[in-house]
Structure formats: C-alpha cells, structure tokens
Length: 113
Length: 112
Image (spheres, rainbow over the protein chains, first blue to last red):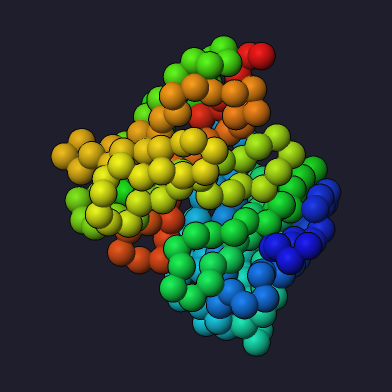
C-alpha cells in the first residue's frame, strides 16, 4: 500500500503524559498537513509543511503541540502534558506538487483518560 | 472568520432517490472547493473539486456539484443514490493560503 500511513492507529494515555504520532506521506508528495477531528465535526486544520518547512500553524495549536518534518519526509506531531480535551482523531494528509487534492491517512485516535 | 456550513447533519434516503447536500462558505475572494467522502471504515477521499471554469463539476460515482458564486454555495448532487453511497460527506474550501476549511459533515444513510 503506497498511501499515507499513520502510527499508532490508537493511543490511550493518562492526562499529563506526552504522546507522539507519526505520519508517512506518499513518497513523492512534498506537502503535508495535520488535522484534528472530533466527534460530529469535520477535520480542523492544525499545521502545514512544504518539504521540511512549517509554513502555517493554526491558532488552535497551543504551545503544548509541536510538529516536525525533518528532511521533508515523515512528520511527527507531539502533544505535551495531554489534557482530556486533546482526545480526538488526528489526521495527516499529503499533496503532490501542483495538485490540490489531499490524500488522507487513516488517522490516530487519541484517548486521554 | 472563514467558515463552511453544511445544512444537514443526517440524511436518510431510499435507493434511487435523488440527493442534494447543501454547502455554503463565507469568503469573498477566490476559492477552491471540494467535496470529500468517507465510507465506513475507510479514509477520507476526494469526490470532486472546483478550481475555475465550468461551475458544474462532475466527480466519481455519478456525483456532481454546482458552484454558484453569488450564493457562496457548492451543493453536491446525485440523481439516483445507491446503498453503497452510505457515507459521510464533507464540503471543504481552500482560500488563498495553505489552509483548507472543512464543514461539519453530512451523514448519508441509504436504505436498500
């Protein structure tokens, strides 16, 4: 399967712990997005990378959230000191140069207890 | 602030019925418009998109959407739905930046 992959698929953590998610985009795609989706809502934009540069970051992303994309390949999203309100599905999507179609991964479902 | 509004959260139809899902957005400039679909247990995938030109765009599986600029709308239609169209449908808008804004989604259930 050469689509977007995300790991882990599910994560249960206790409040206050740090978690890190990984996204592997489609190999030739230079643009990568992170979204958060809660029940009954559509995906909410979190951040955007073009190659290794983080070009846009939502105001939704508090200081506890950080994302990286070293070498412009895979990306990680870290949440520090998790809170119950962080419970959500975290989606990653990638896009090739010259295209606007985003290819989504299966998501990582985070539950903070 | 830019936003996308989908009029119906849940729609139930019988097979062969016609479908129209409403989508309105708030942004006065140039937009790229999308409909994404998420079938049960699957990833979000693109159904169709509008960038410019003919405001009536056709997508996969017999879906089409019409962009009406004066109404800031991009409604999704299908003349005759099938049971396999049961899914959640998301309207999305991309403005001048990098951000794509999604609506809250419409869950469609098609009765066989």
